[in-house]
Length: 168
Image (tube, rainbow, N blue to C red; front, side):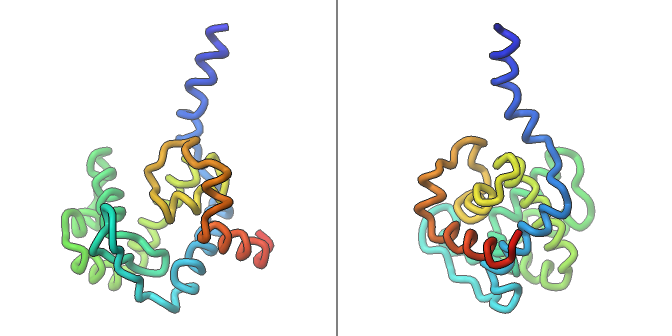
């Protein structure tokens, strides 16, 4: 009996380490890019008015927030994987980071893929759940997003409509 309990407790931890298929990740990011910036056409993101991101605005085609960028870079530092590119943006002010990423779209793509992998892992591969985390907070623990959260969220309603339109 204890083996079953142990499996139930540890299974979500193992799921967090799974790598989502590159094709599925690309399809997910295509939809996020369309929602966040009309596929890169509208890069003027609104300034956040409240919460931890208050006063900041998102950056780029995928709507990355400055705090999120710094967190991704800091995780790399903590895990001893920080390279020169991440060192250049570590602890920089948001405008400096935006300038660096504008000149380095490959670096933006790298950050976006890391974040997408994280939200997809924490969502056990469920795109709608991952999209909710992308918009509402990527650090939500696995299992913390309810069906009601998804059904009552305008971003997810748009995500669903886009998913149906694209057929993926």
